[in-house]
Image 1: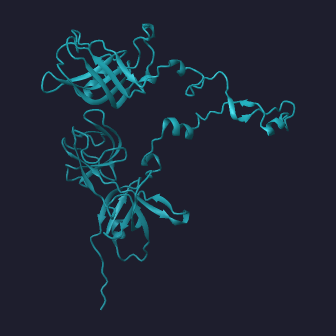
Image 2: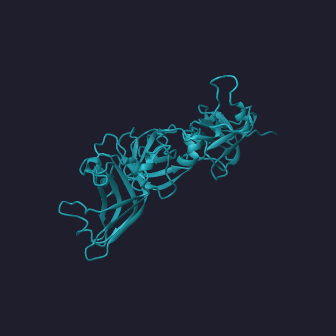
Image 3: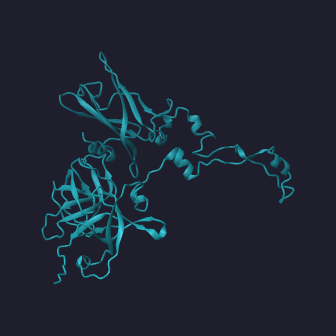
Length: 413
């Protein structure tokens, strides 16, 4: 079955995932072969070391770390089927669900003869199998010991290697063991000098950091810029005024954009995906695609374009700002902001092509602040070289363009 149907069975209580493991085996050609694509594991343990009274034990700490899943189908009188695969996608389904579970997806594995035992029984339950999850903390004692910095339940403070005791009981001005401190013979101080709660320390050693242009004041962590010249205007400036050659004052400045093109412009290209369902409500915030994009990628901050079916709605397309992209479910879904870039939210037919807008992040140099680079956001820019006015959004992306059609010439005798 599809991944969406497999997940729905567990979220809609058709199958109770509590303390159980569900394996998604789908029939393929040639029959009766099949393929395993994903597994659902209930969050609670059925038993611990044979004790079923421990069935309410939460396994989050174990399942969150899983990188590989291994098990064996025992075939009577035949070759056993060994399954040992690396997880490529994962998700936790909890919230208000009565039986939360973890969903793991991996590269499809072909298995033979799925219509006969030992895979399924009369009650359509899989045979009892032993599943190995790796990595797994075998030493549970460590998890609750004083040496586990994550729970901070130390019974005694350890001796510091750099700090020493300062005896100020008798004299608050000068420690009575001042000579020992100076000579380096003072006793080590029993203080907590662990840096586990220091974000800079833990991110570099344990947690890591995730950064993108949207969470970093709109500036990409690293980029290769292409310089160009242009005039910057406010977003409400009329294009006719910008294109006019009779303006007495001009302020051409050095600018920078992040595309590989020479000059910034409003360009869109096919993603290879189409709408899987029609959009009949102009305020719908979720798009369902027929497949993953085959050209480029869709991620947070990507701008999508779908052409309007109603010729009365101008311009002839609607822009969508991607808030999130779920590529685990099938078909994939995209959460978007509708009517982006001053376009109009309207209805769209099923199978409408989905385009992606080429990213042109535009920056300007502020020389008076030590070559400080700043996004040119919510502005209009008259690009020198192609006589075009481009509009930028709040992230400095180009979301529209206007080509100056009339150039005024002054002819003298």
